[in-house]
Amino acid sequence: MLKTLRYQYLSILWAIFVVIICEIPSSDISPDSITFFEGFDKLAHTGFFFVLTVLLFHGKIKEQGSYNYRIITILKILLITLFLGVLIEALQHFVFTYRSAEWWDLFADLTGVGMGIFSYIFLHRNHLNEK
Image (tube, rainbow, N blue to C red; front, side, top):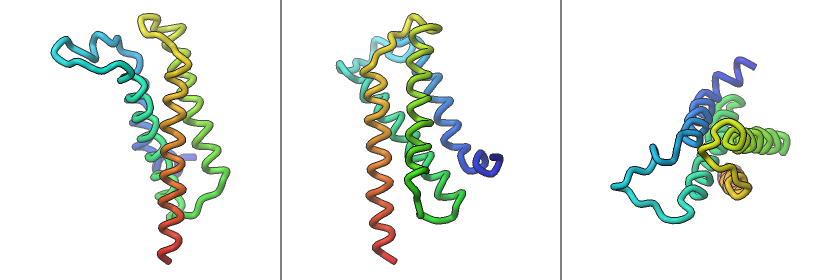
C-alpha cells in the first residue's frame, strides 16, 4: 500500500487540486477580464480527468518498472476516477450548493478518462512493437 502511494504522489496531488478547483465558486475562477466560452466547464473537466488518468498510469508504470498492463489495472483506474467524479458532483450538490452538479460534468470526466485510457493503450502497444 505504501509502495503504491509512493509512486502515486503526483496523481494524489492532482486529485486534490481537481477537487479544490471544482468546488470553489465560479466567480472566483473567472474574473471579468477573462471571458470563457460556453462549455468551458466541460472542457476543463475533461482535461482534469485526462491528466489524472495519465498520472495514475504513470505511477503504475513506475511502480512495476515496466509497461506491462493488465485489464485489472485499467478497471481500477476507471473505478478510482469514476469515484472521484461522483464525489465531486455529490459535493457540489449537497455541500457546495453555489456550484451546480450536472450529469454532463460526470460525462465529461469519463470522456477524459476514456481519452487517457485510449492514450495509454495506444502508446503501450507502440512501445511493445519497438522491442
